[in-house]
Structures are given as structure tokens and as C-alpha cells.
Amino acid sequence: MDLEPATGIMLDADGAPTCFTWRDEVFMAASRPVRWYSRALWWQDAEQAAAGEGQNLVETEMWRLWAASHAGRYFFQLRHRMPGDQWEVETATP
Image 1 (cartoon, rainbow, N blue to C red):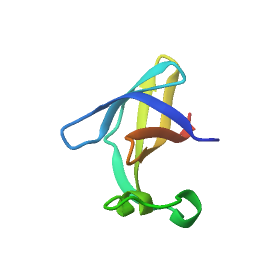
Image 2 (cartoon, rainbow, N blue to C red):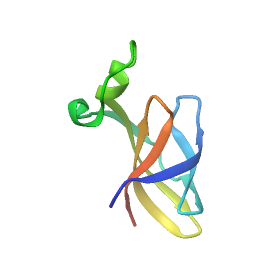
Image 3 (cartoon, rainbow, N blue to C red):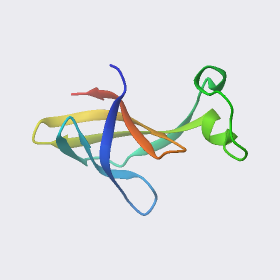
Image 4 (cartoon, rainbow, N blue to C red):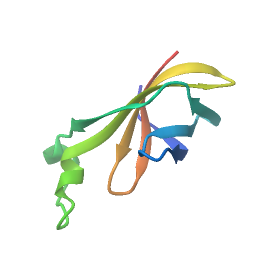
């Protein structure tokens, strides 16, 4: 699956996603999201880092959670890219 955008992200007090829109469906978290950080191949994905932004090019915040909508329940792996505050669905498994 190619990365797809997730929009309308709502976060709890700890910064975990609780609600988001994917493929025109609103999904609500059905489990406690688990966060970890993935290392990026910065030499392939980035040109030149601006001062103070190097860490955001090396580490990517990732989340795993079950979420449900009218379309059903899925196990998601979300990617949160900084800078830019972009959220993407990396995998969605029914």
C-alpha cells in the first residue's frame, strides 16, 4: 500500500491520535495508540536540512492502533512527519 494522507487528526493530551479521516471515512481509536520512532534514510529523502531541523529528518513518529468507522474496524500504522505536521496511513489491515 502506498502512503495515503490522513486528515482531521484529533489528539489526546499525550499527543496520541484519537480520531482521523481516511478515504472520506472518520475513524475513532478503538485501542490505546502505541508510539515509536522510525529511522528515515535521510540521505535519500532530504536535500539540505535547515538549521535546527535535522532531528525531524532522521526520526519519524509512528503510531499503531485499532480504529473503527462505519466502513469497519482496521489496524492502522500511522506516520507523523515533521516539519509540516503531515499524517499518513502507512498500512491499514481489516
